[in-house]
Image (tube, rainbow, N blue to C red):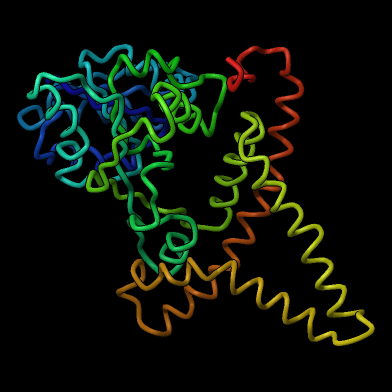
Length: 344
């Protein structure tokens, strides 16, 4: 079976060596690699072509498409259109692949072909934190779930570790090019819609692992989560989650602070409520630190634990700022048919 690995990149010259090295080390080699560059200014396309030339003995054919201004969805769609294989494996720049990643990710397709049966629609891999230092470890524990937290029936995989047939991609309408972020979620929903009855259209392959490096600063994390939430607003995703967040920060927390400072009786109840809320909100990330921060000293683990509520708060505020921006974009573009993707 011919399997094509695709990705889209933009100014990833510094992060690409670890990804390309890990692609070259795959136990199951891809039959081709198709990369769409969105118009990089740091020499990314030239670096990829030179890397492919030098490593031609261990890499398959590498094709580089250049489409200035292409967003992630457009880049992926162009790469998939150009791919020759019936099965597409997608990943992203900035990651490192386990040597067995492609083998595990595509095993269900290979097994179906050998059995002479129908190919599955899609397979969901997983990603784990590739964190260095106390801040990144705290970030990973805060924002990245562990494998044992995943329910395969409801999991919506990131397109940094996913495989699907070209036929399923076409039936899903491709990646939504009107979205700059959250595009893989819409694609996941479209794949699931092709599956009769409840459940996921993805076969769960938890050992198809990609190592993902968390953000290295609060400012870059803010930007990331602002963009995610703006994408939520554009696509009309997760209304309830965002409503709960606004209610918590704009109603519940101010009410507890008001009672703590100005209450006429038992002001300690306000402080107790705030402390209890912070503990509940940080409990799961603190539990993850036991695994993600296994190599930390007790003092370093304490430092990471103290960073968790700060990271959560920054992410929440970024989402509360980004979501209405996305809603406003959606309102201004309300005559565009694609924004009503749920009703199509």
